[in-house]
Image (tube, rainbow over all chains, first blue to last red; front, top):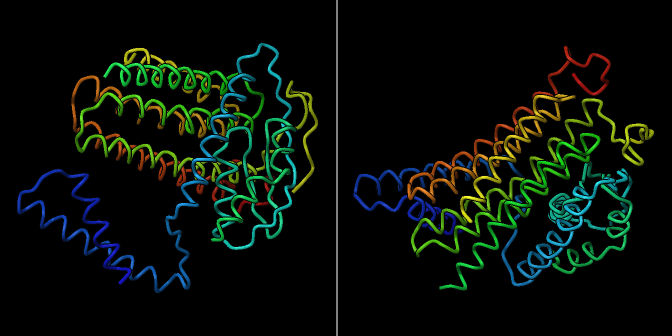
Length: 155
Length: 111
Length: 93
């Protein structure tokens, strides 16, 4: 069932990228969809339990909030770069985390990296190593709002 | 359509400005790990803003969808590439510089 | 506006090239090269739109993919295959 959904998605994706509707090109597209599905099927046998992120309203809400965070920290970093005295004090510190599932960890680490000013350098069981341009950025992460929002997603 | 024009011009201008800011940061910041932040600046907001700028000017067509794909691709691959670079640099013996970033800050002894 | 944006992207590419030539470490160079690649994607997309060459968007899409894979590949290489360059590094095999 999952493969059918994936095949339909791939077909739509292919048509959107191609924009040609001649029989030859359509059959080539069909062949590539079949080959991709076959590869996914083979990969699934290697990868024991695949993790899937299903799109939901909460996820899009989180992404919108993340976008706002990205904008805020972009402005902050841009201001620091342009100010003549270059007010950056890089820190590299442990960030205690409470996220448990692999998906939550991935999302959290990627969100931290996507926000300019903070960068996940290592992911461990109960903590991340985070490099930040300033102490305030780390303090904001330790405040834990991002983590709470991710845990609320329940993925 | 004047509103779209203005919005698109705004996106292009801010995107271009952030782009140059990232470039300047890449030159000014003191060590590798802080330069990563400057590079992130140009990829997380500047690239989507520039692409959104041309999307707002485009007529409805498949091209619009393609630009959207480019935007999603850049946003999705950026953290992975950044993380790979930071990890490889740590592995390769680079230590983040801690402190005021003038070159004399002590390096951390963690990890 | 479009011209200004293209100019900004070009200026950023020059700045990235300066960092790529200066170094000092190999990672700085890769970082600059990755940034240069992303800016190339933007330049192709913006330029293709400015000139109304629609197929340029496909090239930009492809370039974004190649840039990502290339960065990852080079980083894997330097992470695990750099015995010659950094002999004192305990992590390298």
